[in-house]
Structures are given as C-alpha cells and as structure tokens.
View 1 (cartoon, rainbow, N blue to C red):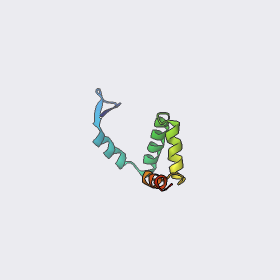
View 2: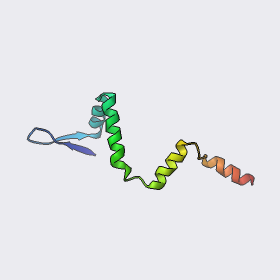
View 3: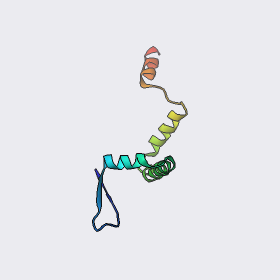
View 4: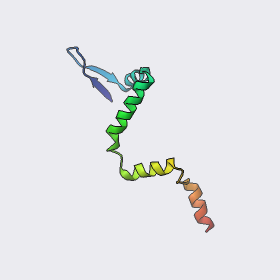
Length: 76
C-alpha cells in the first residue's frame, strides 16, 4: 500500500507504509495521540456494533477464555 501526499511540489510524493510509520513514530506524543483519535473516529463506522460490544465486555472482564468455557461445559 502506498500513500500519495499532497505537497507544494509539481508532482505528488509517494510514501510507502514503512516510511509512513517512521513519520508517525517521529511525531511528538501529543500529535500521535491526535492522529490515533482521528483514525479511531474514521474507522469506528466500519466496526460492527457487535464487535464494539464484545470489546467493551472484554475490557470489563466479562468474557472467559474458550477453553475455560468448554471445560466448564464438559463438567456439566
């Protein structure tokens, strides 16, 4: 994947993912945080509500490991 950057130059600059990641890593932490927040906003619509709810449940510690659930089912 390549990103085309708009510049003042007569031609666009092509930046690969590795170069883009280096640029992001070079940002001050406050700028990286703003970037992450914006990326979350942009991609949030692409994440199904069911996945967002599952992620929230996991963060709250409400989910158990699949092996643990299967073991519990086998005991009953």
